[in-house]
Length: 341
Image 1 (cartoon, rainbow, N blue to C red):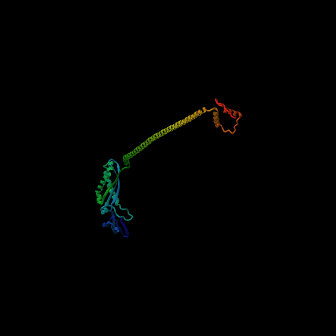
Image 2 (tube, helix red, strand yellow):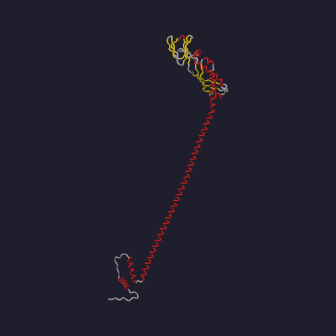
Image 3 (cartoon, one colour):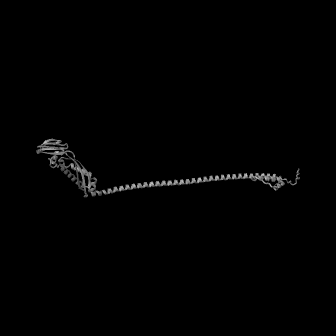
């Protein structure tokens, strides 16, 4: 932006690199160009500064479609001033003294370009329906507005060059826009619901697969447990049979041992009895040839061996005489003993 230093009766102007200054003194151009620096007298001088950099102009307007629907159009126009002298002569870009209002040159350019854009856009939108405007309106309007603005005679004569036009949006009223969005929103919601249902179905299928696997595992475990119980029962039965067989063998062995022992004991008793009987028979045979006194003496000896110990024995004369009489009694058929004195 240019700077002006004011002194009494004279001022100094220092231009900017993006401002084209035109110095008129009494109707004659004294200085013009970019980045100028000069002294001038404010009393007889007029200064105009036209920007030479690219300018952006956003614009927003409404139009009616063929089916009587209101749409709003948002566009952005890029332009520049290619003839600053012509612009300064037709638009107000003057540098005003301190305390005065600003120059209205940019507002004039915005009004001109905005009216041109609105006029051509309304003509174009009026030939299309709302659906066509929403579908292809942006690209169509970009082409139409660019050609119209670049070919406009007023802009060319003023020294304004249109660099580009960008149509940012073509939108219907809010109620209509919500109504148009409803089918798409419902479709998207349906797609989302379908995705949720599919996800749930997949989850249910996975849960079913997991349940089936768990059930199959439980069945397998139950089958193995059944086989284990059957095997344990068979093992217990086999162990009981083996134990019973071993007990039977032990019983048979014990019975056989008892039988053998009984037979041996019986044989021993029989042999002892036979020996005793044989001894008795032999004894009887010996006793048959003995006399009565001898037998009595043997009997007394046997009796004496069976009697307890006798500390004192009293023999009466009757017992002694009877015993002596029996002892010295002659056997039958024997010759009487002769006692020699």
